[in-house]
Image 1 (cartoon, rainbow, N blue to C red):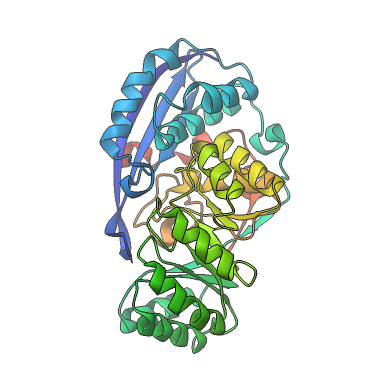
Image 2 (image 1 turned 90 degrees about the vertical axis):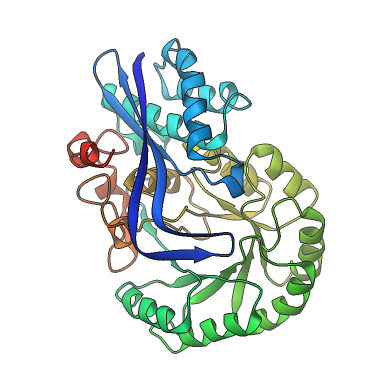
Length: 372
């Protein structure tokens, strides 16, 4: 397969409600959509959601990256999935950012699958019969708004919820009380501080929150404050999961986090970790070292990244949890029709979502021209 042309588009889709966390608040989904076409006229589509507070990338730095790498992309042949894998894990890193790599990786994989009429799950050795069960997320909000959101979420059978928190313990405890009084009274609970805590916050709050049934503590400190994270893991790691998210980007960062025992749990994301192949490599490395991980998602991902997450989940059978899959549950409109989203049981069946060649079957891309 030879790529003939590359195009990209900024995408901004309004959310159905404001999404807030410690380091960001938005009413929109911001992404870059990449489209490429092979010399045979086959089109591939990819997506990334750059977050400056994670990888340092923005929509504009990704655009610069894509222009920079276009000549190399157009001069490279991709006859096999292995050639794509080698390109995105060995050639692109160091030249462009991880979000940029993600968008190119997904578009290449999508185009290759359609050009050679290969089912991607089967091609990567995944389980087409696997069912992915998603976990819910509660953004930061006032109690009245959270009660309203919990009521809306009660339509879905989430067995696990993640709570976005700040440094206010009383407010976090109030959220937990609201959850326990809702239909999610028996749900497992995780918290995500999104880099907001200090070491003193962690020392004082973790014991209290463990008593309240919190099973995972995600990205407590700013991503480069690894010494404090290590101390917290040494103190509480035998009793609970201390998870890295923003601190985990590349294989190099994973190697440091594991070798120095800085944390004991990891949050993978297709966009921040450089696409399908780089994220799969991280998963295999982390689990191979005896550590656990989950698959996370950026808020407001379209069905393209949801499909990529499903592809990863078909291959990664030891994921502790899977996030995302919201589609038009949270987006006012999605880039494909029908939107790829979990059902009332909070599940997506891989066989239904990825039965045709491509990440997204060509006939489902009916909305794309109206949105980009």
